[in-house]
Each structure stands twice: as C-alpha cells, then as structure tokens.
Image (cartoon, rainbow over all chains, first blue to last red):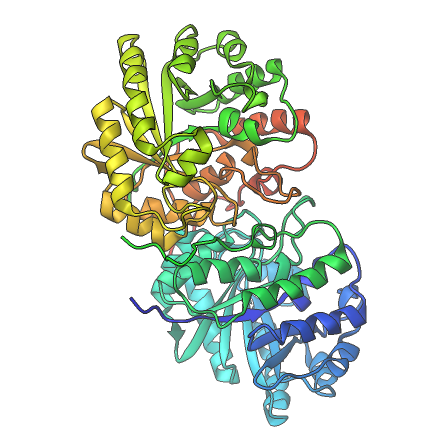
Length: 306
Length: 306
C-alpha cells in the first residue's frame, strides 16, 4: 500500500534552542541551520523575534537570518510576537513569519499579557505588512490539546482561531500540544473533526514529548489525516536528564517512525545525523532522542511482510 | 465510549534489572516487589533463573522469591531457561513460570545456543513439571517484530511458536519487540492478523523503547485488539544517558497513556510513584520515564470533549 508522504517542519533552532539551558553560539546556530538545509528538509523555523528579555537565547535573530545560507527550495521562517518583531524580521531574508496565540485565555494572558481576541486583532497589521513584503504566514494555536491552567480546550476555540488565521491569509495552521497534555485518542478526535484542512487551511501537528507520547500522538495524527509535522533535531529543548523533558518530538525519531511505516519524509537520515552531531558537540551531554543513539533498525535486504 | 480495560504485566524486576549497570541489592529488590504489589498490579515478573554467569544481576532469584511478601490476588512469575531453572523455581513460592524462545533462528542460537525447535522440545519437561506443581505458564516469543541478525520475521513463525506454546499448556503468549525494531504499522498488522487471542491463547505485547516507539506501538496494539501489556517500572533497563536505551516501556508512562485515553489499567499512579522513587533512590541518576518527572496532565475538573 502506498502511503501519503509527510512534510517535516524543523523547529529545533527556534522552539528547541529557546529552552536549552545554555546559549547556543550564533555561529553554531548558523552552522546548524546550514547543516539542516542539506538534509532534505523544506521547512525550517530558524529563530524568533520575541523580545530578548523574554527569550535571551534567541537574541541573535537578525545575525542568524543574515548569516545563514539559504538553500534553494527551503522555506525559512521566524516567529514574530508583534508588529515590531515583524518589522525587524522583514529587514532579513526570512521567507515566512509565524504567529502564535493560545487556545486558552488564561495561557494567552500569562504568555503575552492579552486576550485571545486582542492577540488576533494585533495580527492584522503584521499580516498586512508581511504579505505586502511577499512573505508567507504560518499560525500556531498553542495549548490546542489542553492547557495547564484551564485543562480541557474546546475544539470550537481551535476552530475559531483557525478561521481567524484563514482570514488573515496564513497558509497553514499548526496545532501545538505546548505542555505535552495530548494523547492519541484526543489527537484522533481533533483531526477527525477538523480534517486534514480546516476551511481550506492545512493543519500541522506540533507535539511536545513531555510525557513521552509525542510519537504516539504523531502516529494518531497521521492515521487521522495530518500530513505536516513539526519536530526538533536531536529533540532540542528536552534534555532527558532535566526535570521536565519539554522538547518537541525529535526529528530523527519522527523520520524513523514514518519511514519504518513506509511513509516518505524526504529526509536523509544519515545527513540528519550530521546535524545531530553538531548539536551534540555544542551542547555536550545526551540528547532527548533515541535514534541518535540506536540508529535505525537493520532489516537487511528484506522488509517485513505478513 | 466505554473502552476495554487492559492488564499490565510488570516486568521491571526481571527484564529491567537484568540490564541495569549496577546490581540492585536483594533487599531492595524485595522492597520494590512489595511496593509494586500495592499499586494495583495483578501480575509481576519478579526474577529469572537464567544462570548467574549469564545474568549476574539476578543471581539472587531464590532469595527474592522467598523473601518477598505475596499479596493476595497478585500472580508472581519468574523466567526459566531450562529444566534446572524450573526445578529451582519450583522450590520457591512462585506462581507462574515464563518460557522464552526467539522467532529468529539466528537470535535463538546466539541467545541460548540451540534451534527454535530444540528450545520448544526442551519446554515439554518444564511444562509438565510446572503444571504438575500447580503453576501456570507464560510463553515469550522474542524478536517477534524483527531480529537484528535476520531482519524481518515471518508472521507464520510467530504463529507456529504460539501454537507450540498452546500445546504445552501456556495460558498467555507475549510477543516481544526485544531490540526495538517494531513500528505501529507492523504492530497493527501482527495483531490484526493474529487477533487478541491466537488459537485460544491471549496475546500480550512486550515493547522495548530502543527507538522511542514503545508507546506508539502500545497504542497501535491496543487499537488492534491487544489487551495485555508488559512494562517496566521507571523504564528500568533503559537509562536515557546510556548509549542504547534498551528498556521496556515505563509502566507509569503506559498507565498515563492508557488512563488519559479512558482505558482503565487498575493501577494507582500515585502508589506507582512510590515504587518509582524506590528505584530512583537505589539507582540514582535519571530514569527513562517521562511521567515520573512530569506527572500526569492536570485537567482540573473537566475532561476534554469535542
């Protein structure tokens, strides 16, 4: 049976590095992004324009975007929290801007100090400037599968935000399990209800491995139609020896999962290991990834069949 | 929707401790088993009678079985490799003996120095003595989802071994992904083909988390009918900071996965954390488990619904 391929959106340089315990030097960030650009990835979120006081590890957003090489066919994106961040990003060769809002009022208030409605209103100016400048837009719905303050998140809220994003002109909406509360059954419900696309906007899945369920959730999302997955090289952001393994699902573990099932990712696992090794050299210690230690299974010449 | 409950078979004291880098003191093994007996578990594999030269960490099998408290309603099992091991086990208050054979000829040869057929022939005497002594029997099919030497494993081989076990009088067969080569698609194929029971023998799933897919595989197995799962408290046997995370799926992460989906496990997560803490105190370092760090998600009063 021929299975649909997936698209992997690498978010390690942004969502991973922002949570690491040490500052990843600017030249190493650039080297990592350049290395990732050679793995077959077509989408890389490289940095964030959130204020350096909030995310000091990404204070070099401008230098990174200006210093890296842009590989043909790869879309490089940056997270922007507000119009000022957008305008700074537009001074760089970025291809895409990513917006974010929580599906939980309480979480959005704690995260950015305003209501969901005010976040969405604020996106209008950003979207206009970005689209005018020829950039594409991605929208995150964070805490989409559950919120540590509010608990359950009504799917209607996720739908409303997706629709607001659609009106703003985003090309894709990523549903984030920001604090690792999702489970495969809930993930299946969400994707069965919303569909692979909602109101014409493709939906991506963004899972964190806080409770070890990221890959199970990715499998459930694939089964129920999702074809775009966010992940983080080396499982960046989730050191297994730290209390609170909060990282995204590791890109190499996602690639192994999908390729083992016969789902093409377009990524070259061996080249991806070069990026992982670069991360390992800079961070030291162990990464929150399994296949970087074990490699992929050796099936010899024969793939299993019934 | 009411979902079928599952049975958890705790294998940490045997399959976990045999692979840890240090010897877990006998009194701590006994304390761990006694602690696990209070969590709601109904099945615990407590040790192995494999020769101490091969598995030195479990050389205290007799002392453990004689020293532990047997809780009412809990079935305590021990792995036995041969008739001598069986006879030693029968001198203890063990309830169940577990047999094992590889689905791969090469793996069985390397593991126990004989062919699959010779392993199965050798089980006849063990089964007779055990059943005569009033013990129940469990059979493992190891490398059932793939072998590091032979690659793919024909499902017919797994079926044949299961049938041989059935003739020996085993009450359950556990399909082991011994080196972490399974993926959810293959797991689904296997359980769809074999069924929840094969020839009247219930099938259990025994996943190792070598490539981070253990919980995804457990989800796939549940979806396709499996209702008995082996797991290891604290993810014993798979230290995340060691090259080669080979442990079983952590019991607490399995319990979290299932309970989050509305699948009852009968286990008390809080009590399970006491067992985890005991493991942690003895081993130090970090365990290969996520929920022992993160706990379960906090949903407040409301469970998510569409």
